[in-house]
Length: 258
Image (tube, rainbow, N blue to C red; front, top):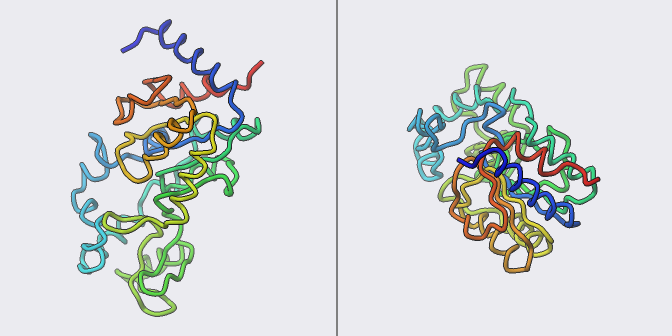
């Protein structure tokens, strides 16, 4: 682990790169939300580590073909920490970056909505893996607030179906085996091409095609800053690599230049 003076120097150098940038794209993963009480998936306290059935429900084939998997998924949705989680200092720092007028876009793999809850403009947030706050019908594509379906589950419906066509409902998130929305991922890659600095935060950068945002930015000449609690699959692209507590590093990194 870096010593404090070394860490401070590394943050200062990365801050100089941030201060020189005007079109910053931020790419976030689960690590930025763990400090808000939302566990990651594969870590020691991850959702799938503690509950293998939840991982099974994340596969679209299992979800569509096995009613018991869907019923378990609906029970898990009743108690997901996303409903009560609050943004942390890392989220707040990204709101400050937007206030400075230098946030070009915020690409997130997260489905918790905490960036919007913190105050980032919804139009700047690109949710490449969808959002847990809405449902979508697999058959007719009807989209509604998640709370409507959860109310039905609480009332005794173990597997609520679409109110429009009686098709299978799921959260409006991308499951394994499900194609990403091409318009959404295309926009994420486009803003990465346009940025003059890429800031990747809290992601292992190992899930594709979303992780392609980092090499796309690098190929376009943008410096890359990676902030994470551990090494990532793309550390080789980093001009500045900051390892540690995201809620401590981001506010220092993104403070408004003097």
